[in-house]
Length: 205
Image (cartoon, rainbow, N blue to C red; front, side, top):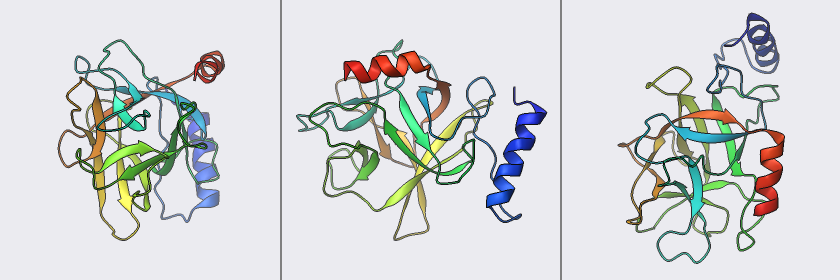
């Protein structure tokens, strides 16, 4: 659980950098601890029985795994991601974030972050860096409604004030690509990745 001391530190950090009217709450991991800004996590589904964690895969006509998907492997945690807030705070506040896998295949561009690509057969989909027709904008992380410590991502395009939730679709092979959708919103919990696990993932990429 989030201790009073840690909560006080978070509030002090946040209010130092934001106006008092800002009500940014800390993002908590699955154990109720504040998620470190720039930390590495597994993104795991709240609802079990319909797939595993967030991974990367080749969908459609891709020859390189550029798609961000929920893996079909129920016991897989997926691949670790780094989540970073532009806020100069120790912990991640709810709001705008940058997300990226800590390791990407050699056929992908580096550095690699999550983007949204339009004009695809699977609708506007979440991809890693490598497409030209990416939408300008960014992701936000918000509290989910399923359970304590659950969250959801939305994408906010630069040319509109509307933010659209991130949900799942199907690639016909069992994986569930992440897409912009008003249905099937993907709610998740964050599991902190140990430093040894992170090193192993980078070595195997």
